Length: 398
Picture 1 (cartoon, rainbow, N blue to C red):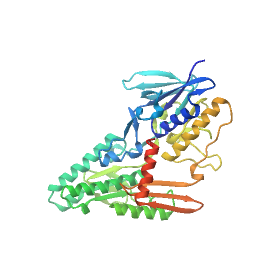
Picture 2: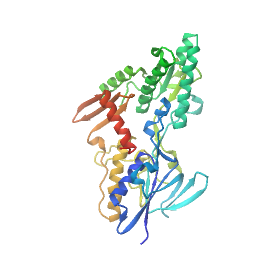
Picture 3: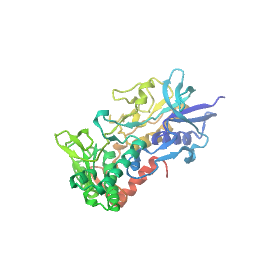
Picture 4: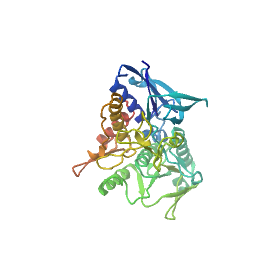
């Protein structure tokens, strides 16, 4: 009998978890047929997107080679971009790194292309933290500004060069601003500058931080950021980043040396050309077992899919934790479908416990959980260890 081919599109944390889950659940065999695995991604390795702010702060490498993972043995890796899915013929078309187009048949297809960082309009200035290259540009810019500040005699201009605005106060913006404030203070001190003159402003269009939880959580998070040297400005958005300042939605003008955009995620636009059914927001339409509507043998999970708990109608958020749990269940669903038996259905993790963890620089973390109406907080070193564990588990490094 011929082998079955399982193609996974996307080598982010959800794609990797899916690959591992399906391999372990099937043991590489289904009904006496060998299961061949192919992973397609435009990157040459796994990019730890959750740590994208790290190259903006230091020089940390956030790429992990595919061969690092023990479960990658026997997996075929293809570097390229999938351009279309023909669910009728059960084949995909992809473009390789040389611009060549090729077709690949599949029996099982997992679409896990995730999300990308939302970009502002090009004329709004600043630098969006979208990829490692943008992160490196951010790092070089604030380093250059601090070097200029050393010889700057005008105190107002020196202050501007030592200031940064982070536009967007989601978890990415919070983690970026906290790590930048701490690292910029260390660098300023090494250059002979007064570290207390470093200013990192986090701009939020909301009335408080962390709208996902109760008000007291936002207050505690604000206090934690203040301890890191970050000042949060509420009910204010950046309308435009100029060369020497940012224009704010309330009419104010804030002098800064750099504006960094961290304005959230959107489903990967590559989905638009694949021919899969999408929501108005651009997510793949799937059922309670992650099956893509009208496409037999095709599944989709993670940020790129609209996944709803059928018991309460609640949609999963674009978070690594949700994606990893979906991947674990996907392995069981795929095996059940292949064997022709009932498959387990999705259950939102938030129906069990609300849980968020945020990094605020080395040895500084913020963890909030809610169960049975009770709020639980963990901060400091233990909070940092929990956040680091989440990052490492998301990228399957432990």
